[in-house]
Length: 174
Image (cartoon, rainbow, N blue to C red; front, side, top):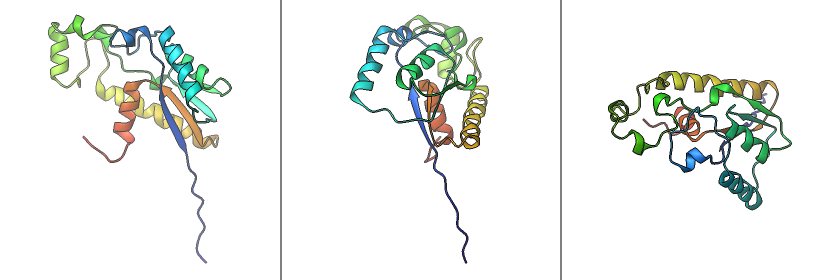
């Protein structure tokens, strides 16, 4: 007789927060703790009316206000856990500034020409960022498995979503 295996399916919905004024102004908004702006709230309300968001047994959210507010709007009756390790990248001295303000800054030019791999002044090193993010995402997976959560939403930032897809998505690319 052959062995019977039960395969469990886990679904994780990666959802970016609604817009902040800094986003609309084209600023580097990493760890800046901006709330959603009126336009961001209105856009989320419209999306909620037009589309059905996936059901989630639990929401894991970046601790930054824009993510917590988005989670409360989209999943008002779902347990939300704040996960510090999935907050956005720290842009350091470039935080809360527009490219136009930075374009003549030699440190900014060096950072951009280096592929944004080195840490910006007073900012986060990419290797440390990826390490932090990997630890945070794996803690979410561990929690899901421990508590038999098969459908979860991760409310986070665009940079985090791109990094997660780079680290865990297939096909693997450079």
